[in-house]
Image 1 (cartoon, rainbow, N blue to C red):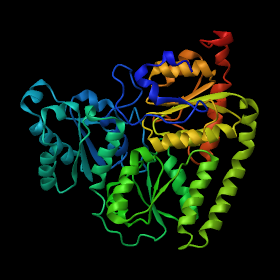
Image 2 (image 1 turned 135 degrees about the vertical axis):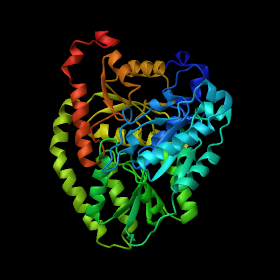
Image 3 (image 1 turned 60 degrees about the horizontal axis):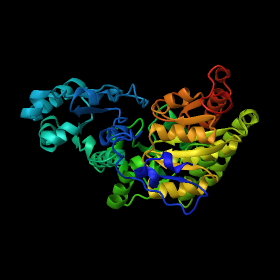
Image 4 (image 1 turned 45 degrees about the vertical axis):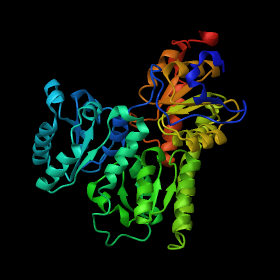
Length: 453
C-alpha cells in the first residue's frame, strides 16, 4: 500500500493486516472534499424508521430530501405499504425566511386525515435545523388533535454522520415502546432488530424461528408495525443483526425494561447456524427441546444447499473479493462466506464501523487485507487495482466503480432484490457471485490494469 497516494488526513483510517499493531480511527466526520461514500444523518434516520410500513413518514424540508424513497431502498411489507409513499413539506424560500411550522402542521393534518396511519414520524432536515422550526411543539399539537403518536425525528443532516441518524431514529422509535399490551406473549419470544426485509429476508428468519418454537413479537425494522413496537417490551430477548443501526434501541430497552441483547448475523452458513444455536441456548432453560429442534433444522437446511455450493466452488477457488458495506457486521460474515467458496477477501471496509467492529474485522481477516473506514471512490479504485480484485461487493454507489474497472459486482446493500440471508440466501449469494465473476462479458471489457489493461 503506497502511503503517498493516500491523503494525509485519511491515513489513520486505513490499515493493512500484518503491517504492525492494529489501531484504526473511525466514527468521526468525513474529510471535507474527500467525497465520502457515507450518507448523512437524515439518511441514517430514514434507513431505520421508514420500513415501519403502517406509519406516515413526512420529511420536513426541501422536496429534494424526500427523493430517498422506497424506489432507492426497498423494504418489503406483508401488509400495509404506506411507507412506500414519500411525503415532504416542500419548504421554499418564503418558508425559510418566515418559518415552516404552519406548513408542517397543515401537511400533517391533511396526510393523517387522508391515510389514517397508526403513527407519524416527522424528519428534520438541514434547513430546519438552521431556521429552528419547533418540530416537538407541532407534533405535540397534532398528536393531541388526531389521537395517534406523532413523533419528531431530530435528523438534521449536517450535525454528524450516518450513525447519528441511527441514534436519532432509535430514540424516536423508542417513544412507542411500552404503550401496548403484553398479554399472551410467550416466555420464548424475541424482537428482531436490524433486518430491513429488503428482499424478504425477515420472512426467512421468522420461518426458522417458528420451527424452533420461538415467537417473534416485533420486527423492529423491516416489515415493521406500530402496534408491534408498542408491545415490544414484552419480548424476552432482543436479537440484533445490524448493530450499527439498532444497538442504541436495544440498549434503551435493556436499560428501561431489562431486555437482554443477543448480537447475531444471518449471512452465510456459519453465522446463520450460530445465530440459531445462540437463540436456542438462551431459551434452553425454558424449553429443553429447543436445542434438538434447532440442530435438526440446521442439518436439514445445510444438506439442501451443499451440492450447489460445491459446484460453484470449483470455478471460484482462488478468486479475490473486495467488500465495502454500510455496517461492519456484514463484512465479518462475508469473509467467512467467501472462504466457503474458496475465495479470499483482500479489502474490507465500512461506512459506520466502530472500534470494536474493526477489531473483530481485523481478527477474522487474512494477512494483507486492507481495512478501511469511510472510504472515497479514489481509495476504493486504488485498492482494487493493487490487490487484483475479481469482484466488488457493495451498494449502489460502488456499482459504477466495479463496472468501470471491468470486474464483477454483487449488490449486498439496499437495492438488491434477491434474498441473501439464511441458508437459501447463501445459495443465492454463491450463484450471484459465480454469475458475475465468471461472466463472459469480461472478455470484451478488459480490466483497467494488469495484463488486459
